[in-house]
Structure formats: structure tokens, C-alpha cells
Length: 256
Picture 1 (cartoon, one colour):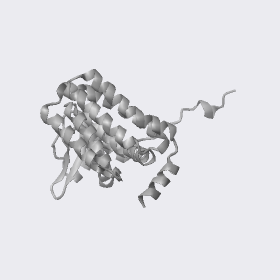
Picture 2 (cartoon, rainbow, N blue to C red):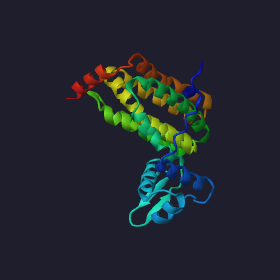
Picture 3 (cartoon, rainbow, N blue to C red):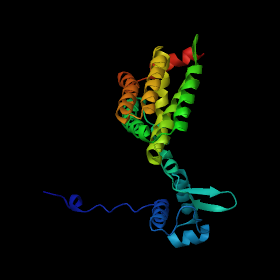
Picture 4 (cartoon, helix red, strand yellow):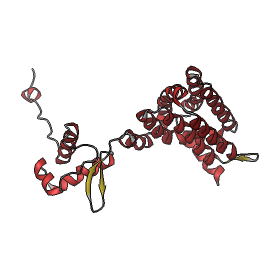
């Protein structure tokens, strides 16, 4: 027999005032009332319009600033940002940074899919200046590879720059923003791999040059294959080291 309590519908939890602020400002943007670069009404008027307290309004505005929707200008008020992909997708990098070490392989898998397509697109769109900028990034990586050892931090900075420049050369700002935000989180696993496998740095650099060669040839399919194979190596390393704390400890000792 079903009890009366079980059949009664549990009332939905009403949204907080802060949630109301976020949703209503989003609606104003979507409806075109507030566009990119628009200044928000003064705090007192906007709070009254949304039916919330000024404290809740401030909390909602702060949340939207962190999400890249709004920006505050000292002494000038609060404005809607240009709503560009790079700014709106930047929280992805923060969320990825909070990911547990065991999820590194999954993030690397996402990155591999996105960057393989990025390389294929870049083979069609990159110009001579873009190719030269990639060669410059690889030259910096070469400089970090000393005969007596590698400056891992400098090498990985150049590595990241190489990948980011390829993504930006596609002209797809959303794709480039996604890749750029994922690169930051996956750098930790790449440091661990570089420190635990002395051959990883030289093989990584050889793969970079192979990718650049296919971009110079304007060959989308080969560029895609080269990029996918390149990123598969660190992805497989992450899969085989789901709990990287021991390796990270060894890395810290080597740096001392």
C-alpha cells in the first residue's frame, strides 16, 4: 500500500536570489536588451528591476564576471564583455585544473580529438607567417634540450605555444579556446612523462617536426594523423599511470 507521504509531490526548491540574478541577466543578454559592451544599469535600479536585494545582485554579478559574461571597470560600472569564445570558455581550464589525476587520460583523449581536427584545419588555413611562427616555437624547444639535460619547463612552454599557434591558425576561435584551456591541465602529466622517460622529450620534438612538415605540405589528412599519433603517446602514458603521486614525488626529488 502506498503511503500518503510517498504520493505527495515534493515542492521544487525555489531558486536563490543569486540564481535569479544570473538567469535574468542572461535573459537580458539573449533577448538583446544588453549586448556586448553594454553598461548595466546602476545597482539600485537593476536590483529593483530584478526584484532582488543589492547583496544578491552583487553576488550574481561576481559569478557572471568569473564566467566571462560581465566585467567590472573601476569607477565606471559593470559591462557586458564582448562575449568572445576565449573569455567564455576560460572557466573550462579552471574546472579541468580541479580534475583528479585519474581523469588526466580522459582530458588528454578529448584534447587528442580536438587537436587532430585542429591540425587538419590548419593545413588548409595557415599562412607562411604562421608556419614561421611554428618553426620559431620549435627552435625554442630545441634550445631547451641541453646536451647535459633538458629544461623541462622551458621545453613544455614552447611545446604548448606550438600547439596553441596551430589551433589559432585555424581561424576557429571556439576550437582554439577549448584547446588552449585543456593544454594547461594536461601539462602536469606531460611534465611527469618527461621527467620519468628521458627519451620522451626527443621523441616529442621529432613528432612536432613531423606535424610541421605536413602543415607545410598542406596535407590535412597526414597532419591529422601525425597530431593524433603525437598526442596518443602521452594519453597512453596517463592511462598506465592513473595515480601519478609516486611519479610526481620522484619528479619533485629530481628538481631539488
